[in-house]
Length: 149
Image: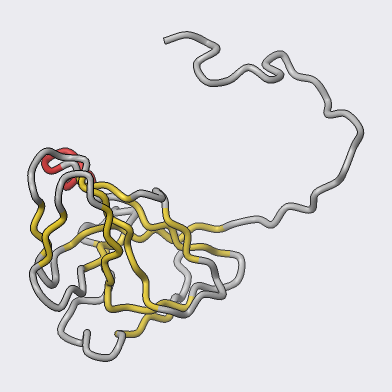
């Protein structure tokens, strides 16, 4: 497994929170903590931007992906609206998580709760080449369940 250096810093006033970290030896994602000032309720159907109290400097050629935590999704219906959320290599602001409550009950977010995962992935930039017609495949435009259930 290749490791890369990624700089991370606390946002002022968030030094009490843990920085993103891998919770197990082979985890793909680092947990992100909620930097809410006070307990926050996420009502069923509600969407909120939840701060994490961290900023990261992702190297050129990589991106950050913010993904839901499976336990929160299964047990409480908590997900991320723009999943995965993308953090570009040139972004230096605070990482925020756009949470949505798809469950039936209010969900309480405490300061320091682990609310999402951060994955660092390599990316390639496309050099788009305009053509009059694309090459054909056996699938062509088939999509949205065209192969059946």
